[in-house]
Image (cartoon, rainbow, N blue to C red; front, side, top):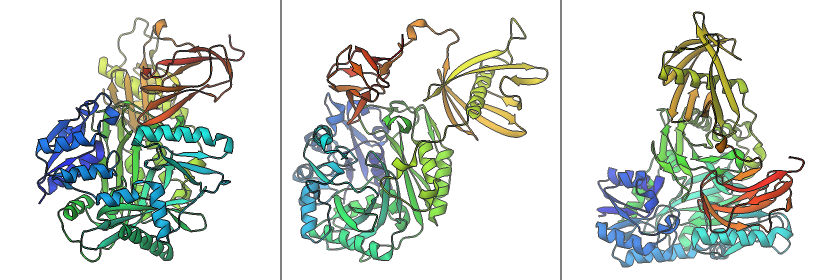
Length: 630
């Protein structure tokens, strides 16, 4: 019997494994880098061990240190989570050699599927259809052989760009996985990404637990997952399940794993890869089948026997990944403090979060804040409940993809099940928000600020002069000056003739707008202000009345969008003419490269970056003076 489990991972998956361990009476051990010393998973574990190292992004890849940590803390088993070393056969062997229980498949099974190229050869030999790229195939997808999570992947549509994109994919794969092998496969434009959950014991039983649709992706990384997959008929479902079971049996698999397929527009499935670990999206399967996959992993690792048949599925489950990122700016990851994170209480709602209020989202790791899951009797109800839960969430301090998730869940094509991996690319930009709604939120912020500092209205040297407060809306940077007066006749707000003030306090403002009562929650964190209300969520920065001239930034300045390291600089020099969109340099942050490009045609008048330089968010990297500007 396992008595103590060390989770060789961090964040949300470590907390999720700890939750099951606590339910089973099993002690928990966390490991952490210096950057994670105060992280939620460290705080929640019964014991925690520091992993030394100057590069926090690589610390969790030190298998030797993790094994030592397990032995030092008295753990008798290791759960790898996902990512990092979860699919590293040598790490699994090291855990077993140390006399610890490995909560995962045999190292030989990991090795068989550890390289996507070897896995495809194995599946082809077993008669499972695979995708193979010919010399003239375009477009193609460059993929990291040892990768996952969309890292090291590039779509190439022109032969001239193939060499550069393969070099970039190799560099990213080496940074993320320690292996720079890449390969090509045909890029299927309108395919669906469908995967089958498998669970096997050491006594010959192999379960297939439904199929999940994971087609809604950005940067080849999943964003929304659901089970059962909409529109999958009995014949295709049977084919997928039989192929997944054959894959598991072919390598003597035990434990939890996932076999992934790409289903073309004409309904033909092709094997992509087998993930020899728990998947990020496993909660939807747990919800529909009424099981705890981590508990079953532990049982299998202890030598337990699965029942001959899995439980029957019930209802529909959908998961949305909430990221600290800006979809409007090429999905740029965001860093900073998560001031508040709350979701409404709702039947069937589950939240697996890696962060709690006040935690800092750093530059070293993935920007996923949480997975939000809803289980309901039907797909329609699950989509509606999940959209409503996200819309009512309180997420303060960071730009997130929350609004995009809500938009997808309510999109007519998504609701109808018309899905493909190109879905987000076809979704198009969001409709511009109502400026009046933003101004109304800014008015609520100003009224709350005034009520928190003094009685509304305040003392004025010139009574006829309005109260003034200026806010910058985030992340678009639009400035809104609020002007209002409070007199015997009540509130008079410029630009809001139909608004009446009902009450105002530091944290809540109630307004009547065109005869409709509206309540706005206002949270203030220094100069940062978050306003949540029936008309949406808005983030502002309160601006000083008299800005310091030193704070002004030269027009055309390219600022670092996040903390990171300059890894490459284009072949450009100060004085060169550059065209809009031309890459000038690349930053590495969160194990991915982020391109910084010229915003417009012009002249490069300054270049402050150099390879290896670490920069903070907002650092001026270069200046491009637009053509025709003074």
